[in-house]
Image (tube, rainbow, N blue to C red; front, side):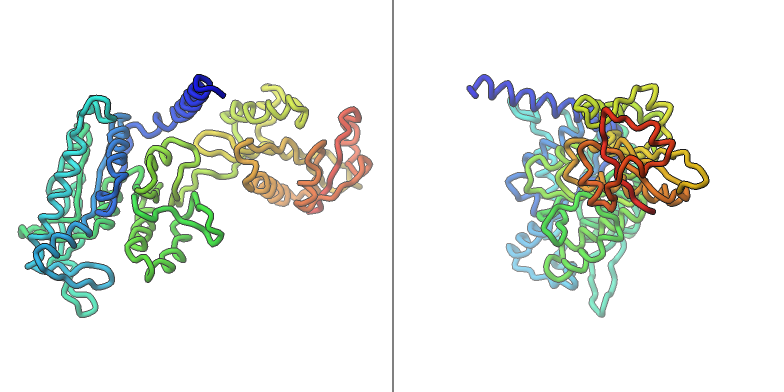
Length: 448
């Protein structure tokens, strides 16, 4: 392939991606996202790209609240001032002596982020971007108090979030920037946990998404495979696992769990070292991190009339290859109540149909599973098994006693799922009469 062909191929890939990102651009517009990144992220070489991606999200009409940490910067400032502060359960005891160093570090990061979001150099991703960043006393805090006999002094916790003020700034197309600090009603400044600020803000503002950018952000299962989706309850063993080895990461997981259990439908765990993580997670179907949700965005369900277009897109290539029998739009519309689908973000990833077979009194109550199809990009997943199991359970609930499938190419797959190959004569009489001998399909049966 010459350079011109390579360039054309790259352009086509970009066009393909851009077209497929359009539904997400529309879905995210005017939604509120809270994005948290710790102080280590600010110092990382990829942070400039993160700033560019934040500017992109803002330009697409997403309402953004940024929450930054400052632990390494505070440590450096304290070391420079030759001040030591103890930690208890990985939470800093903020002494009055250390408060000026803490405020100096937090203020410096805020200025750095505001400066980076104000860049507008020609030939840069920020060119032409006009972004107003607003900080303020949006977080009211209270003392963390005495825990396990330890007085945390000016370490605090969130008492309330001024959601009305934040909403006004978001309505004016401003980015709201929060740090790990809050103010008491008596005018004191408290050092707060960044994770708590982000979580309490997301819950109070009823954010559509809460995004954590950490060094180790995605969750891997015991086989070292990426978990793309996990429920809040399933986080428990991972929180326990990281409690001693990675306490800061553990706090992010605990915060993600709290947010998910308190109304934030989608919490994303991403790595700040991954260039383009925000864009990839938000504008591609599979993303690149782990999403914590108790409102599963991919489920098996019975189809409805609005799914017909998606079914046609999924089935036509298989029908053209002769793997499935052709079904017209009219037939699909009339039989739509027989179909089950797996849908993700508006796209049908898999489908199958359950057809009752008329039987006589001497025959077992029977049904046929037909039209089992999985999108080519997801055939290595377990979605075929998932939708087959779903229809088997539905058949049991309807008191069917046996299931049949007729297939020309996938008999082995059904046998692996508990079916056995039988002859055409084993079909109920009503189904035998409709058997297409020219197609010569294999018949498999499963007793329920």
